[in-house]
Image (cartoon, rainbow, N blue to C red; front, top):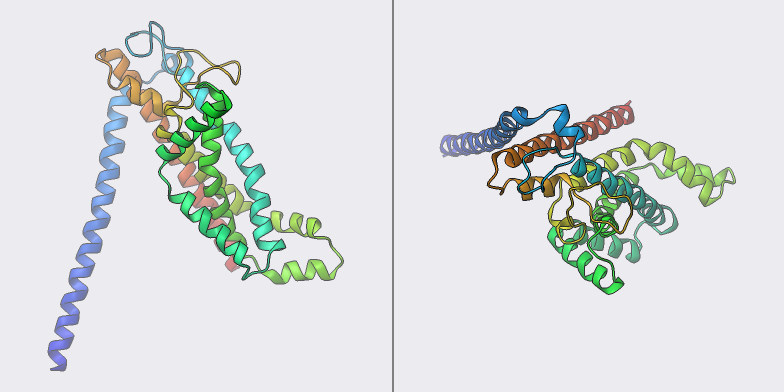
Length: 287
């Protein structure tokens, strides 16, 4: 009887291991196929002119020019959203972890709310941003894209930084108070300790924000030009891929693949950088 149970357990272990290996291989193969396809198609079109020039003759049918408008638009939207998101998110995290009690009902409800917001699809943020813009009388513009992406990444910032802050040893906070430090001075001590986690959360949020098309489709608009004011529409790399890949003109589709390659490289760099910072933070913590 015992032998049969052992054999059954061994078979179960083998099956589970095979499923794990198959799942891992499937994920890696899918990633490899995506990277290969985008790289093979994007490298053919990628050049300095593609990066440094604006599209001419229309982004959908124009054969000449590049994707500079989409690169600059993405930098504007993501850069401004990241700064605003950090300004809003860091005080929230410190309020939850320093000013509120550990088992506070308000802290629990706040974390639950941000978990829900974290999981909401980006198209919902885009729809909400569009309704908000209509209410405020704002047209599809750079400002609309910044507002929507800021709303999208705030939950990512809050939950990512909060998870690290909750592991922070409260003995340091108590020691700071015992030395006569105020809560604001204690916050500065904690910020220094949590800076790797904040950097990781920033990189992950930027990676998510710069690759999102649904949230800015109805709010940022699209243009062949570089926006010079918040009221002007702005192009982004995901929207460049979306619009130009459906064009009947081969040169325009080539620009879409070049934009996809640049976007993929940016997201991979941010994701890997976030992992490296987090691993270094964990290793230093163990030491």
